[in-house]
Length: 234
Ligand code: FPP
Image 1 (cartoon, protein in one colour):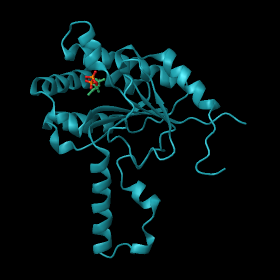
Image 2 (cartoon, rainbow, N blue to C red):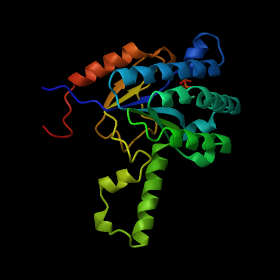
Image 3 (cartoon, rainbow, N blue to C red):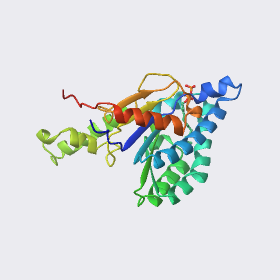
């Protein structure tokens, strides 16, 4: 059996709150440490030959969190966009965002567009950040786009296929994830990339996101390479 080819890793970065709580710190301290982990994991993924990394930074459901936590996360995001994305871009990382932009503040949306524009030509590695993202909403919006095309008679109903649906998603330009990792011991998908992970290999680790790192990513990748992927065949 030849080892599986690996292009795309998707991560649900869970457990920041519990990491902070265990130390008697405010939840935001867990998110700050989580942001440091993300930087380390991006470097590790580049070194390990991964081409695409998609991370769940903020879900559409996360808007329902405590006001203080939401504004703390937005502040962290602004800081991260100002300090961390620039060096990543300079190292050849393309940065993409996916999610409902109209929920976000205008300055954040502007900055996101600028980062995407400035890193557009980078082709070594793509970091895709799911922000204000929900997979069902993404699929609903794809359905609406297709319905509109059909209504205008730009397409025939019989031509609607999986390829066309995939092309209407935020992830249209990137391959489906080979691996999905969720940290913190929770075994759920939580409205993340529901369409795209049809044949992904799932990994659940009890490690809280701030404690996750290069070594564990390496272990997961090496287990992935040994797994048999059948895509429904025998
Ligand atoms: C889940 O942990 C994590 C989040 C909702 C936020 C993830 C954000 C980061 C890792 C910050 C870095 C990202 C950027 C781009 C600045 P949780 O709060 O649900 O933890 P809990 O389940 O232990 O409460």
